[in-house]
Amino acid sequence: MTSHTEIPPGEAADRLAIRELIDAYAHCADRRDAKGQMSLFTEDTRFLVFMDATAAEPTQTLRGRESLAPVFDNLNTYRATTHFNGQSTVTLDGERARATAWPTTSASTSPGSAR
Image 1 (cartoon, rainbow, N blue to C red):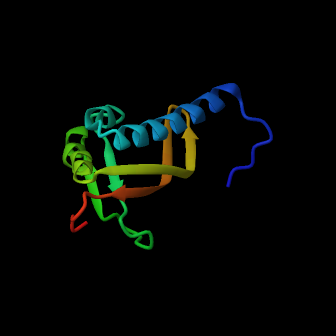
Image 2 (image 1 turned 180 degrees about the vertical axis):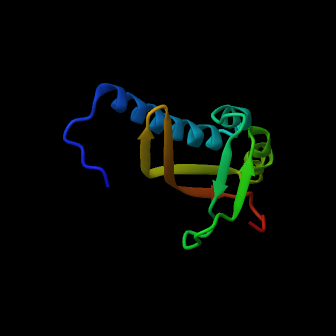
Image 3 (image 1 turned 135 degrees about the vertical axis):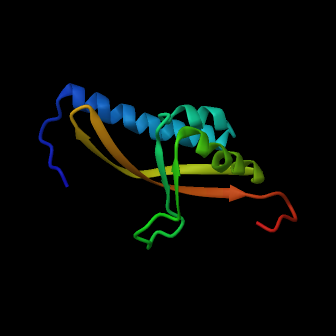
């Protein structure tokens, strides 16, 4: 883990912007705003889904913004969801950044639903 005694203002701003992006993702998800969620990603995005926290490999890998539509649309099968954003790790490298977030999601289904 990186030890910071002082963070330059530009780096602090980048880290805050990334955290706000993670929060915007959860906000859009809980409001069923699939188009808003998709707009948070680049056209050439690579989106990894881990359904098993112990797995080394992702359950699913999606490529391209348009490939996200069915995943985000699937949230409509739930009556309500709440995404709690926990820890996140951000690595900055010049003009590039890599972030990993660990959200916890609570989902409520319609009465009588099999989910």
